[in-house]
Image (cartoon, rainbow, N blue to C red):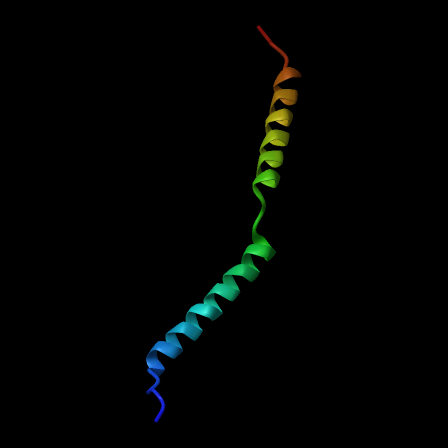
Length: 59
């Protein structure tokens, strides 16, 4: 005779696998890499310095 199967455990494992798959898809769809975040931050800082450099000093 074969071993009994715990259906609750099987159901929970399937739910975890589904959540993991969905999370991976969202990470690909919406996530950004560390390099992309650093590049965007550097561009924003450069733009800020550029604008600050062109401000007029009125007495």
